Length: 105
Image (cartoon, rainbow, N blue to C red; front, side, top):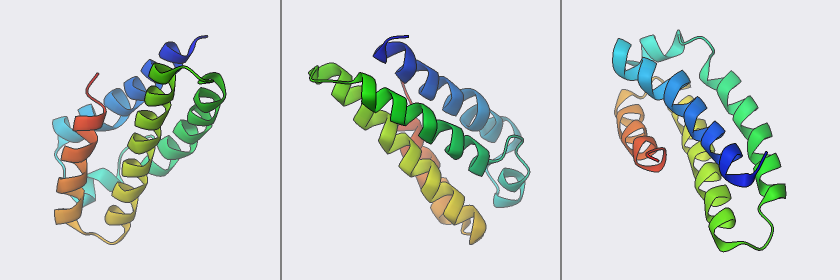
């Protein structure tokens, strides 16, 4: 698997497992807590894929940018998880908009 495929995998998981269900069922903290798989599970798996992506992205500028963008998506997901735990709906709303911008491939 090449770097672009790994990157697309990360973005696809974020889109299909988080953004699309969040848009379909609403963006409330209560509903986001009930996602299956949970946001914490998604973060765990995305971090693993992202580590592999970082290993593949050697000195190629485009590959490095993909790895950075994927890392930013995972960090935003971590921030959303924190906001959900704190039941901070305003932060969740802002972070989901930010995530959509990064995960728009």
